[in-house]
Amino acid sequence: EVQLVQSEAEVKKPGESLRISCKGSGYKFTSYWIGWVRQMPGKGLEWMGIIFPGDSDTRYSPSFQGQVTISVDTSINTAYLQWSSLKASDTALYYCARRAKVPGGHLYYMDVWGIGTTVTVSS
Amino acid sequence: QSALTQPASVSASPGQSITISCTGTSSDVGDYNYVSWYQQHPDKASELLIFDVNKRPSGVSNRFSGSKSGNTASLTISGLRTEDEAFYICCSYAGSSTWVFGGGTKLTVL
Image (cartoon, rainbow over all chains, first blue to last red; front, side, top):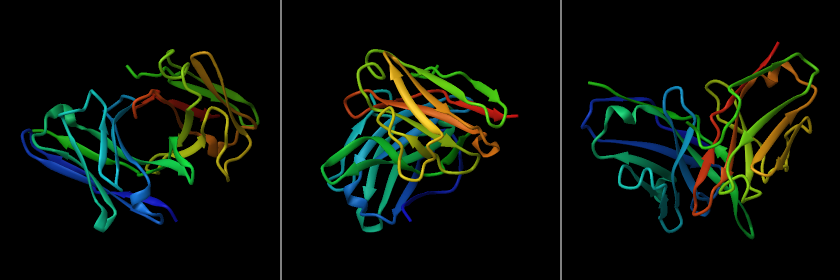
């Protein structure tokens, strides 16, 4: 079964660092882009960025460039979303999602989603 | 405010049909035939219902259908069932490896 398993909820203080994870299984991890999506409390989904594990090519949404770091560790089929200094406004639910592909190329939708990681930043 | 506009909620009775709209701009929905729809149940992973405006993945009921006209996409669910009660989210490719989403619509099956 193809799935993305995300790390558990986190509670942090402003200024702390954090890395959350998204582990892929049931497919060739290095062949599919993995995207990250934010959902702030009571709000809709926001696209953050996407990474191709095969070569770590990473594309950030302009709104999130410089605010977060997306990375992968292909040895353990895991993608990461990282903050160096959290703010209260980073409190949100974060999803990872796999970009669909066919043998001929990558498609323009996400076909598999994780259940999300809740990040709470509060003093 | 979300990039794509969806009604916050819709309700109907079992057996009826509903349509959820998703309005974007000429830079996303209007520019690409890459609208997708997802169903979200609490504490479960989102499920892909529709991709490329009107295509259904294998295993998704043909009660779900999608369409698009100009900057507005739509999801229609026919023959409503109680298990269809969920949150529905639209998404559009917006170019340059970015995607935009709707705020989501809560469907209540009365």
